[in-house]
Length: 359
Image (cartoon, rainbow, N blue to C red; front, side):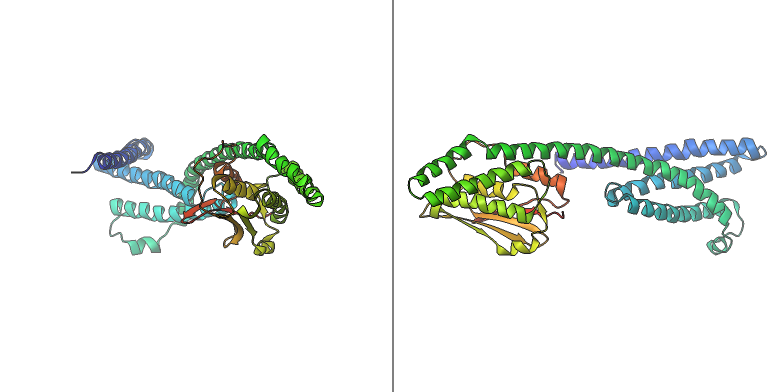
């Protein structure tokens, strides 16, 4: 005996089919009947009941084929060729599909007419005696129906895309704000100032270099805070400054490697501070010690992705979140790229791949 979810799915399917059937029958009876009545009052007062029913069957079938068919055609095109992706391409595909469908529908309607009212009628004769004037008149009528159907889907798609764009824009702004806040939070400053205080008494030259690299990190944060994308070359240069700070802070406990192959795609773009946040995320959630150093690699992947990968050495306790996480990075890239952010966890590694974007 099927379980409850299966029954629900079955009844939903039946309900959907019944709804479609009612929709078709309404058009068939009401629109077909109305057209037949107009035709009767205008031309056919001498018709008999059989003649009137034939006209009704003809008009009802024609209305269903043209109206319902164009409705399903509009829905199908909207699913496979959305207006929001390429409106010019969608327009031409819609025009060609409408003409093709109208011709097929018109042939069916004319064939039905010949079957109901013609004598010795055949499809061969129908093809030989195509009335192009009648076809173009039908095409004009169908184009009006199609304009309504496709116009509705266009407006719906436009409304949806505007709402989605506004949502993604707000999420991106929130993520950028969180990224900036993360770099000026007390913990980041406190940790680096502690390292600097220790260096001052040991190595003046290294202290000076540490200050310059720390200044470079903050300068990049301030310069990129209003940008949606930055060149990968610029992001990697900033990342090197950040990695320098982390190497001084953690010493041999952390092994961070940046793939030289990334230089080949330096002209591509990334969201500012993405790579730094991913490296910081790895440091925050994983144990790192001299006896068990944490390897982190930043490398290029096929299909224009940059991967940040670390070995899983999860901490038992993680400090309070600053709000900058994978969800924020995913939200930013939903606005910037059609490619998704890929998150993979295959023991013993955890990796995040972010798409490169043309700039």
